[in-house]
Length: 246
Image 1: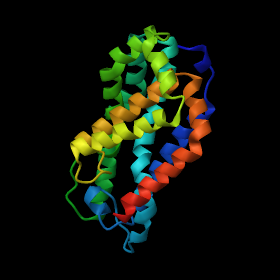
Image 2 (image 1 turned 180 degrees about the vertical axis):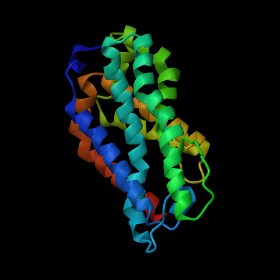
Image 3 (image 1 turned 60 degrees about the horizontal axis):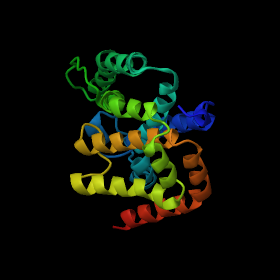
Image 4 (image 1 turned 90 degrees about the horizontal axis):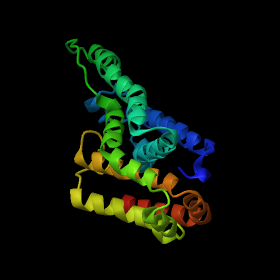
């Protein structure tokens, strides 16, 4: 890949840490929501429905961020790996923990829930809250032909087009437009229902791909994000307020 991407990006490492941290905080908050029991959470006897406002704001972008950073990570991983090496590495790091969790971790979680609510104790292997790992692995499989084509043609027309696209804020806003189109076409009943839905799968796929393209385009993407960050944050806040008011 490009020499501009050879150094490790610790800021991206921190984005990954923050995304997982927010994931944990969000799921703690679910225990205080009246609907948490229906998705396998032990519900607090004193719900705090007011928590849903910050949780809702967080929920819109925490999952896309997770997939976005995952796409970035794959771009970095491809620097010194063939497609076979990448698949082996992602199988070891993603698929194996995913399968292990389905059969050994999730059943423990379900046992605890069943015991707390005096349900019959039934061994239930299920992806449940590990669903995003399965999605990431599928994205790697589906997009590998495209990603390695781009890697082989890193000085080609697509890379030059991406550089030109990301040089201005409108190119970055185009990413938002693509997500709006996806939501409009799929028209999910609840936007934040990402797990085991077509909407969640496509949204994650797009975020994963754009994360890859951001790294692939080199420093142009980072310079543009740094330059226009406050404009983009303002747009994000305005869009959330419109959504919240409606």
